[in-house]
Amino acid sequence: MPWRRKPARHLRYWTGPVDRNAGFKTVLVFCVGCQHHNARLRLADLPDWDWYDISAHLKCTACGKVGWVDTRVDWGEVIDFAKRVG
Ligand SMILES: [Zn+2]
Image 1: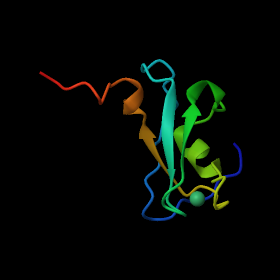
Image 2: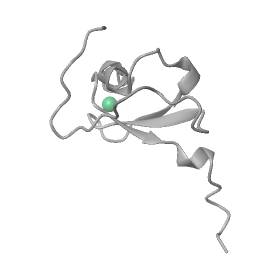
Image 3: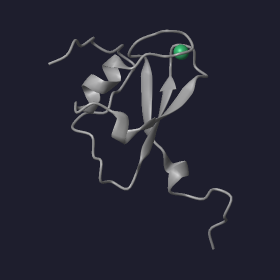
């Protein structure tokens, strides 16, 4: 098991294994350290760890904080927001 840091209390990491077959190729990761930095990660590039461990190891390229991340499913990848429903 790789090095792990306990997340800050307000952070809720995803847990469990990465589902590489859920229809998503990327996830969005927001930095809660500097609030505005975010990045898209390719699922294929992630190590074979559970989300919890991956989250704890992510480092913000803007402010350098490690593990201060909020991971979201990249809905923009599967939904065309420019297209109206109905
Ligand atoms: Zn940051």
